[in-house]
Length: 156
Image (cartoon, rainbow, N blue to C red; front, side, top):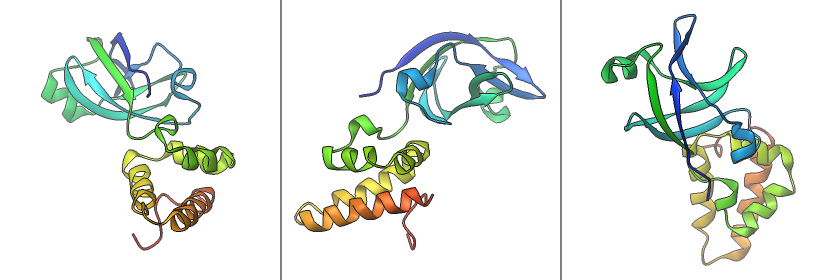
């Protein structure tokens, strides 16, 4: 299960874009990814977003509408609680985790997907409870599609 991270930060602004820098390395905490899809709270209010590179920093953006609704602006101090969003590789069934671990490109692409896409692949695989052969086929198909950069199965 992925670790929750709590910290106090300050809302920064660069070129009219507000963001909160993260005072930790999410790659070390949650595994190396280009973008970390997250959820949690800012000053107790629900938040979903992405930790990504911002100039020479790493943080997550806070949109104008969200800031307006919450009364936040540049320079404001915030209490942040974050956790990776959706199923993580540590949460996967052993056969799925093993298949992804054998293909780094597919695994990294899986990690980069929003939770909606990760859950859709997993739901498709978990629907094969009574057919182990079909499950193995679907896992193989998922790895092949992920390796090719498909966010979802064609036709879904």
